[in-house]
Every structure is written in C-alpha cells, then in structure tokens.
Length: 521
Ligand SMILES: Cc1cc2nc3c(=O)[nH]c(=O)nc-3n(C[C@H](O)[C@H](O)[C@H](O)COP(=O)(O)OP(=O)(O)OC[C@H]3O[C@@H](n4cnc5c(N)ncnc54)[C@H](O)[C@@H]3O)c2cc1C
Ligand code: SF4
Image 1 (tube, helix red, strand yellow):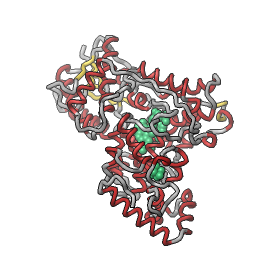
Image 2 (cartoon, rainbow, N blue to C red; image 1 turned 180 degrees about the vertical axis):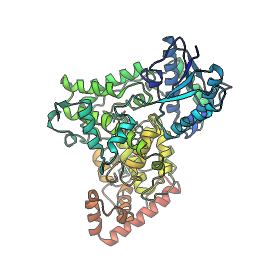
Image 3 (tube, rainbow, N blue to C red; image 1 turned 90 degrees about the horizontal axis):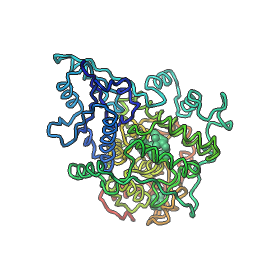
Image 4 (cartoon, rainbow, N blue to C red; image 1 turned 60 degrees about the vertical axis):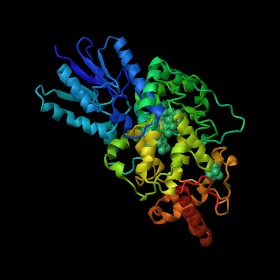
C-alpha cells in the first residue's frame, strides 16, 4: 500500500498535530525539514535558531522511538533544496505517496505557498492530492474567529475573551465569572518593592543534540543577532512541562501583582516563560490554563493572578491570531501614522545612554527574551514615539525574540506597539512618557537623563518625544476619546514649551541617527 506523506513544520511539534492524527505507523512517512529559507528570511537570533532546530530534532527522535518512520532533512544535507516546497517535492518523488497531508501553517507566507502545492503536484505523473488540515491546537479555529468578528462593529479583545470564558468554562460559576468580575486588573500591575526576591527559573543545559545544533548555527549564521552561548531553553515537551510546573508553583501567585514591573537584570520576574514552548507546540494552551485554574481552585494562587494569566492565553493569544488571519495580507502594509524613520543601530547593540532601552535591548540580545512590558512600553514605545518604520520594527521583533512567529509578532508590533493599524488591536496608541517607565521600573535612577525633566539639558527623551508625538499626530488622533486627556493637556500647554520639546525631539533624533551614544545637549 502506498504511504501517506505527512508534513510536520518546525512549529508543529505536538503529538496532537492534525497531520498526524490518523497516522498508520506501518505505512506512512513523516517529513520534517530544516531549510535555509526559514532560517534566514530575517536574521533570527542565534538562540531562536538553536531552539527551533533542536526542538525539531528532539521531536523527530521521539516519533522515531515510537516506531514512526520519520524522514528528517538536516540543514547541512548536501541534497537539501533549502525550501519546504522543494523538500516536499523531493519526498514525493522518493516515496510516490498516495497523498500529502499537512497542517495549516501559522504564517500567511507559508500558507499561500502550501495552497499552490496541489496545483504543482497535479502537473506531475501521480498528481497526489494535498490535504491541509486546520491547526486544532488553539481554543478557537480560524473560521470560528472570523465568524465571531463578522458583522461586529467593535471586536475588542475583552468581548472575545468573555465569549471564550463562557465557551470553555474557565473561571466560571455557572453563567457568571468567578468572583463576580471578568477582569481583576485594578488589583494588578503594582510597582515592584525594592526588596523583592525573584525566583530562579529552570535551566536546561544543552544535551548532545542541542550541542550539535549550536555548532551548526555558530558556523552557518555567524552574522545573526545574539549568541548560542548560554542556551538553556526547553526543547522537549517534558522540559516545557517542567517550566510550566515551576511557574505555577513559584511565580503564578505573584503574576498579577508584578505583571507590568521591570527590574534591572531580571528580564523574567514573575512571567511564565512559556511562549517559546507554546508557539512550537511543546505545550498546549489548554493544559496551561487548566494548570493555572487548578492553582486557584486549590488555594495556591489568588483569582487576580490566575484570571490575569488565563486572559493572556485564552484571550490575548487567541485574539491576536484571529486578527492576523482576519486582516492578512493587507495588515503587513499598514502604516496609519506614516512612520518612516529607519531603526537606530542601538536596537541591535543596546548601545544607548537611555538606560531603559539599554536594559531592555541587552536582555533581548542576551536571552532572546524580554517580557511583555519591556517589549511594549520600552522598545515599542520608543519606536512609536520616534516614528520608526513599521517594516523595520517588525523585522527586528521577528528576529530578536525566540518566540517570534509572524502570526503573533506582527499584530503585537504593528498593532499594539506602533498603532500602525489605526486601532484594530488597541483602541489607542500605548504612548507613555518617562513617568510611566519610572513608576514601573528601577531604570531611571541609573540613567544620565532626568526623568522629571522634559525641556532642560538632561531632559528624558521619552518626555519630549511623547509630547512631540502628540503634537505631530494631533489631527490624526483628535477623534479618539481615550486620548482626550493628553490632547487637552497639550492644547493648554505653553506654546514656547511645546516648541522647545519639538526642537529637543528633532535634535535628539538626529543625534540618535548619527550613532552618538550620549545624547545630552
Ligand atoms: C511588540 C510586541 C511583540 C510581541 N511579539 C511576540 C511574539 O513574537 N511571540 C509571542 O509569543 N508573543 C509576543 N508578544 C506577546 C508577549 O510579550 C509574549 O508572549 C510574552 O512576553 C512571552 O513571555 P512569557 O511566556 O513569559 O509570557 P507571560 O507574560 O507569562 O504570558 C503568558 C503567555 O500569554 C501569551 N500572551 C501574553 N500576551 C500576549 C500577546 N499580547 N499576544 C499573544 N500572546 C500573548 C503568551 O503565549 C505568553 O507566553 C509581543 C508583545 C509585544 C508588545
Ligand atoms: S530617564 Fe528616561 S531615558 Fe532614562 S531610563 Fe528613565 S525613562 Fe528611560
């Protein structure tokens, strides 16, 4: 009997992946391929490449150990065509399968390519059928999200999240939310006390497979951002489960309280560190939400922490994915504020006198990780205020974070951080001055700039850039009721002060692009 050729992509490393659901291990062949095209379409962080390639190799090994026939094409295989389509065609020629079965890719670019596979194979002698199955690892199928969004005037995350809570029964008491409220953010997001002790996170020293991949990445991608050294991320489902268990035991109880806080040298704080495993498929969203809910039910964690955490996975992650598929491919071109400045060099080095940016970027380069508020309110906020080109900013976020895949990176970057989508993801730009950064971090006390100053010699750049941003976009943002306050304050501000801040902003941005590290005037 002819085999079925089953394709497993690098972020589909789940036993429950749809393309394997009806596998006949006696008959079928699983194709997994490491290809240059996927490794280099942006300069992915060296640790991200190690993560994906090592996790792929471990997953292939676990399938083989269970008797599955896996055909694994390594990056340095001399016959590797270095594209997924090329490897599918080679495998089809080798095995002459009855048909090809794949799971819907997470990215538009690959999804479009896969849709052509059927036509390409139809021209060959055997003309195999290509079956592309839904990715069932999310709470909401893409079609379900599209149906939810259709005909709605406002489809904010909060309403989607409530529907998901009702449908999947998380933190529900009958038809009402546990504790009587849908959202406990009012109790969350405190600033960090000086004496806080941050729990250590699990580290997974590289085994033989990972070490081989580290050598490969070191040799083939010497110009990519970051280093393979110090790689300790989870690369198997068992390691990912240990990371989750550690988070539930030691950090979830404080997750809500310190969710938005930032501290020098502590990129993780009380965050879960599960995004890399979730996005690869080593963890499933349901098992994470089940574990968090159980921690509330058995009294280990309070409702504000557990609700805040479940909202990230059941709400934000699913909603972001839905919006990506709803708005692609046009989403990738959105630039509502007409931003066009190139990305300053310090985004790749961390070499800037602004300590908040220096810390967030250094954490990013060292670990291929920064937590949500560093991404949104430091690097994202600067990119928004400085008017950086969304394409360049997208490429940076795609490259530097180990958990970055376009379906989740792009709506967060273009939408949430840059407001380039004009209000699809968020109802207002997340613009903030130095006061917010000072309240939520310890960065300002070690900065050459004065966070309390907006016009003087040592004025914090986030302050004058903030007002310069609102002045520049006064007209475009005028109708936004959520911005009534800053716009009203700007209108009342002394005109000379506004002009000084605009001058400061222009001089600062020119200095930034001349590559000067110290940007004092
Ligand atoms: C500009 C920007 C770019 C981002 N790029 C990515 C990305 O490429 N990949 C990615 O997975 N996340 C991205 N995020 C969302 C979020 O910052 C990361 O998921 C989170 O920092 C991962 O760390 P954690 O697992 O410790 O998360 P926690 O803070 O502990 O949250 C738990 C989980 O909730 C989910 N989650 C939380 N917020 C979001 C969100 N806004 N969108 C989607 N999922 C969310 C993630 O799966 C995360 O693992 C981005 C956010 C911003 C502002
Ligand atoms: S003073 Fe301004 S630039 Fe310096 S760390 Fe604080 S917010 Fe950042």
